[in-house]
Image 1 (spheres, rainbow, N blue to C red):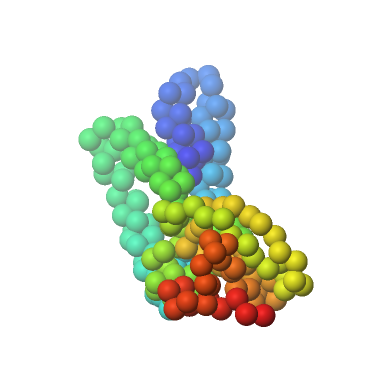
Image 2: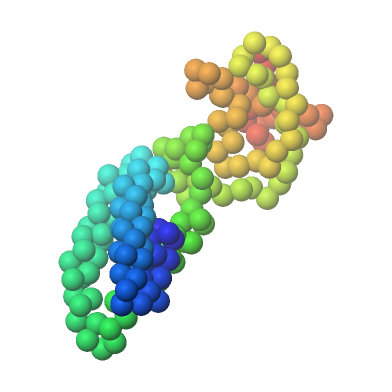
Length: 186
């Protein structure tokens, strides 16, 4: 999105005389960037919504995208106020959207949210950093790891079948206490 927006804005500084090919090249780079982001946005958006509201969320997102598509041709009328204004609006909103997309949580190798609560906590980091012992793949070997715990960090304790192994508390406290609700009995 940023690439498309920058290319769109750069078309304003290209002279119209003998260097027409530069303007065409920048326009095609902008079109490529926006087309690629349009294809990616549907896949990425679906990963962010929790399962119970995924179809509703995607439907609402698609509806607002279509409203933008209906309003886009009206930008020609804004060009009557100042000729470069439509290009500046399209380019700056594309750049802003690309920068704001960096604030979205990473979905690679993450368990997608299944409930509304998981969706609210998706991508948020907890405030505490702790050392955990986890059972590796259920074969009885114990591995030490230090990490900043995430709201969906149970994926790191899952074996290859998706079964979550119980975490062993290394603080010396009884891990079968009702405070954490995890039993470490094997």
